[in-house]
Length: 484
Image (cartoon, rainbow, N blue to C red):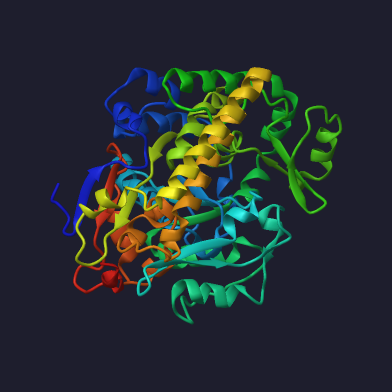
């Protein structure tokens, strides 16, 4: 393969080291996550997907475009919550991986394979979607853009943005008063996100589906989840133990007695209680009020769409591995899991070696000491909870992991707020995290008409994950030059 100009392929930084062993043929990993992505694995998956195909699956599409997918097409799926302004770069990287793989499979399988972005319109954590960050190149600091969601904590297809603030905020993110020739609807919440994604990636063949439309066609899955919560919990427990045997952390607490179904009522979306005897009748009477838990979502997707492959980030890979056994229980074929592209754009004049220097925290010594003391206290607290109730050990570990990440971000905050000289590091590792997990893709998309094609070209979905450091555009200077 001819090296791409301005592209440097480095060891993976976000995907775990286990993924390299998985691609190399580790049997324990393959039994948990399925075979790693390859043409042979994808060909083998096509048969079961065809056998389980649901008639009329294209009704899930509401893009309003003329190129409605072929009934016989297969799907490469990627998804994310509909985040303000389209979200961070990782959204674009998932989409790019899906487009790249779908294009390759269309040729290799001699049949249509379409890339689909699933907008998670049933999610409800408004604090995760109401903001996005950009870099102020002149000041070497981050700018957080935020727009309120009303009502908060409701399923996203039932809420919207502050209509007075959405337009100005999107323009601020994009750095222009007219980012795209699209109508930015404030309600429902996903409307402007879908419009932006479609404007950039639609010309490359991407189709967009809203998750609540998929669930509405898969109500038998929700009914069975209500009736078989004990057996489902046993499968998640088995999957969690399989991950632990591989020294990987489980994502779901199998000891939680609640079914994997959530309900929207009184302006909030909540998980059903363990002894809700009326849930089935409410599901029958008001199906649009119900939606799947994250562990059940892959089953709903596979029941409604002919998904041959699913592109996933590092955390998604783990929870998809833990819940993979549910596919057999619900008699729907599991897709081939595909790690998403991970990448960092380099400012002009900065080489990939700067990524190594950016990996060290820019934290004042007194904050580092206080952070260490907090970590010791939090660890002792979680250990004590686990001794009192071993069933809470998994939940305690997940809380501790989140607390550590939050403390790290807070301790590093003076650097990205401009209180300490951050230099190029503010761009390469914003908020002490990887660039594509923080920075908005919308300003990147406006850098040139071929940006989307450039990102798609970086993906190598059939190879073990790498971290791609790249320069774009190649021929002109970058506004981030001042970071140096």
